Length: 206
Image (cartoon, rainbow, N blue to C red; front, side, top):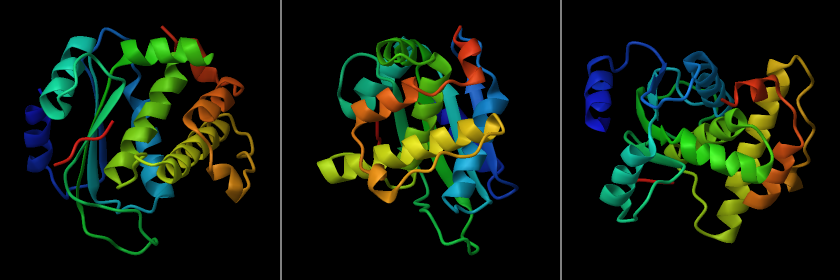
């Protein structure tokens, strides 16, 4: 499954920036929403426009298989990232093209987490897509400091994207607010209402 997507993208490497979204789950996923989100995040992080990312939505059994095979952990998880070329956030200058990597998301797990957090499954899946992209760009949450940086950044990216989709002003967030825990992040998301709530129907990172 994953290998087939990697082979296809290798064939088209360098032709244009591509955020390829594939849905192999029974959930009604709108690919353009996640393609637009991925493209927007890459532009915000000033990554080369000549790179490729694949986002795959799959069933619990499929991600559980990847979870055990790549991380030696049993059971399904919410999101996994598979970095390929080591692309990093830039300064807006031209950068080398390449394949950023793959992101695998399980809507069933996302739905359970969304219910616990009090926001929509769509918002949770968008959060997980951003989380996966940040992993591909080298971010991690192993230690307390890294966790605060990464979760604060993904929170700001998602809330800004949602605000722009609604034609509203992006939220003003002080630099200190980038230091935020995962639980605080999910609480903040639950307080943000978005039209998407109506849709609630190398190394590996997660």
